[in-house]
Image (cartoon, rainbow, N blue to C red):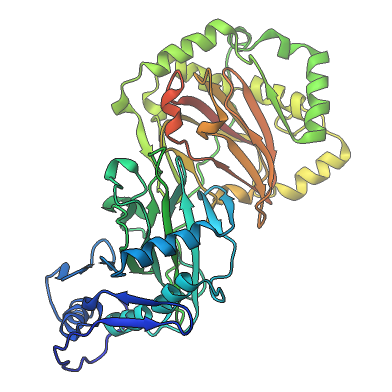
Length: 505
């Protein structure tokens, strides 16, 4: 926690806490929250007076220092009738779906700062005044009167992926749970917290908090506060909550870690017969290539179905599906991506030959013919295309590409992030889908392209067996793969594999 202050000795007086909303209703909160002796103990714990102690338990309040400071307050409201009426009020609100790379859930549309609903306004004032005061007392974080608050509904397959909540002057995040009393770990929806890598990025989940009805959780927003809401796995329960942020003076943040872009490899030489043995002959036909090019130039994307010869594709499926699971390595960090990939130095021979095919000089030339991009010295481009290429690719001297063999299963995704080095150059994305027969778009796994600063989707690519998806991406375009949810367990292969290549002019 940031900030310390000298503590004064407090009298151990316990009084029930009651907030009265004039003309509306009363709400009694847990008396522990007004126990000055308990607050003194919490303050000593948070502000460092209790050394070598990571947990502080004072009645219905448990505070923790790892992986970052957070606090769980049980039995916030004392009246079950109040809680039931509050829940009814919330469920009568209007909700809108929130769905992008990071999350999928429903959020209330009403401005809770000015709502006159009796139970919501009563709890709002408890949060805005009493709990805000408690947090300032315990943590010494000087919070302003600005508080953001909304209601959220998470249902089956809804999720909120890894993030740190840092934005402007947010200082403390909070969640009040109104889940059914029967909520269990197997229902999902846990608040999961991450340890920190030495470079400042999240590493792995080290703490999971199961939602409990009438509990209130808060934590300080810091560069280390990476967390997520686990996917909802239950089909018949709803994770209802009130959440938001307390604001305060801005604090200095460290410079975020910037990843190094994989070095593109130049085209490789393979025998002409080898190249022809891989590709479906229809894509070698000049009339077909001209038609594909017309479509691509107009739409900047196209899907080439049955791209590989059938026997070649089937052999790839068999080989990649049989690779020992220990060979697949988790690719993170989780605030940017979560999928499995293979070490290119340990690929089976047939898979390595496929990568050589995709990175071959002949492939660069054919992609130039299909897209009109200058991916090969022999490629023909118009004057306007040449001028655009010169203006957008000054960081590269020669064409190149990098490839990755990826495995997608339950829980995999990629996220848009501010330090994405791939956006510095225009590029041709080429994804060869393998082993995704019977794929259902409701499972996720769709690659979505959006414009920087916009939420509206420009186009999406759905996994399709033995298809090569080509998309031209400029420096103002971002992409992500939508979170793969638990429905994937009902698909034939419970996931899919792809070979993702990025080509640069």
